[in-house]
Length: 151
Image 1: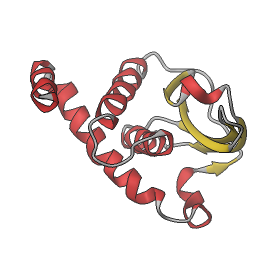
Image 2: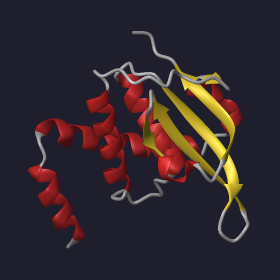
Image 3: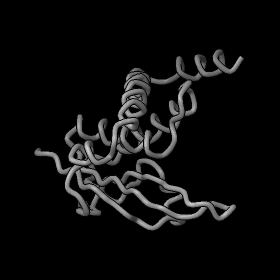
Image 4: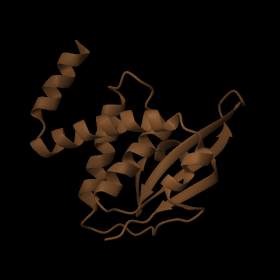
């Protein structure tokens, strides 16, 4: 029943958004596989360590940033694998890189409601948070990577 509901909504979207959602699904898949690799070996992929991209969003990028964020959040609920914060952030970073848009990925640690140590990742481009914004306030940044792309 849930699949039928999803397909009806998917079918009602415009072509551009449908393509973006399909892309988000495959990027979430890649990101989930990528997550299994050791961070020490993959950190260069994320960009410049402990650097940030500017907090200024170009007006020409605003629409695509919102659509990428929406596509990632929607499709992450429909994957049969875990698509939480780090997977969403990596998928978003790859989608932005494809469009030549700079971004910063953040990794943080903190404690959950029961006092256990936990981690979180979020992605920002300009002043817009693609993923993870809703929880970032609970975490201390322990690493960040600026992905500057050549325009």
